[in-house]
Length: 362
Image 1 (cartoon, one colour):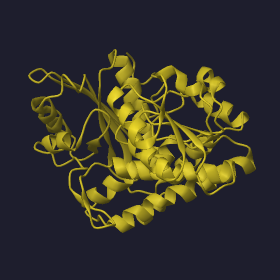
Image 2 (tube, rainbow, N blue to C red):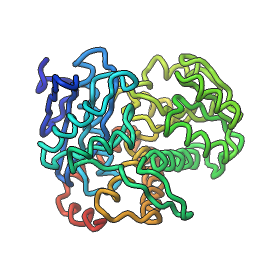
Image 3 (cartoon, rainbow, N blue to C red):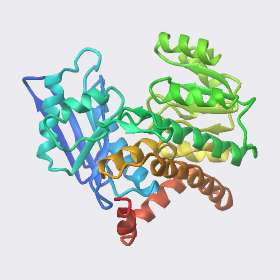
Image 4 (cartoon, rainbow, N blue to C red):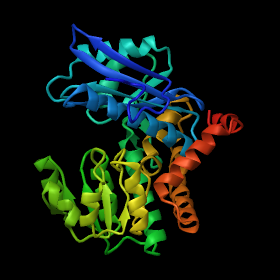
């Protein structure tokens, strides 16, 4: 396969193929851009059908991390890593340690964190072999409680605030009570988003591959369960993709009744053209790497050794304002929010004078 001619190659600075015979490790690490700082991004473990799919995913995800950090005003670059394998059957301490040794060889150019298929305990095993991993340490919340280093609560909070921003812009209301939200994926982020929406008075329609979590959502949140492929056609005000990417495409979009798409999944659009179609249909789309930036904000403060829960929450609350600005500029300039977010992110990357301002976080 050709890297430089790959459709998702975007002048990535470094792409490393990693293999360890003893542990069975097969992984790809992609560093997209380090203009604003070291590349930080999650380590995803997934049973990709082939190496090409893994490469496509890591290239897209790493680029998204660059834009995510730029839009969140963080002193970080963009990177991502994928481990090829089923996390339920193939993930072992030996495999994770082997991955950590390869991270250490990169000398801090890439910093790993948890992602789909990996967890805080996994990161702690990886940290036995490398300094360049984050999302490890327990953190004190604003109410004095202690939580793990898992950034999922921060991601969910940002997503919830992003949904509120979209409702403010598109539906011209501040409250969510009575609105129906379709949630695709009830993982560590999606379920927390569902809980916050339920507390805010929203009605939930949900789908997931995990029957146990669906039953829990039904019992605890009064959610209505639908089959995976039926979620798109359900009557709803908001569609919230919180699973894997590329679930928004012209075929699925034609079934949607929602006027808002706002969720925590990465790379929600199958192609950039789909973003333009959403704009033409007057569907308010919250660009994924803007609305789901809460997690990277959380681990950034941990990595910089400047963690303060109130300061972190204030930074995450900025997602609401950032999205409102994007929505309003999109309407004013008649440009898709997906394209506009890319433009703004690139502008911030190209303004060298912003780097020192970003570093003030530390």
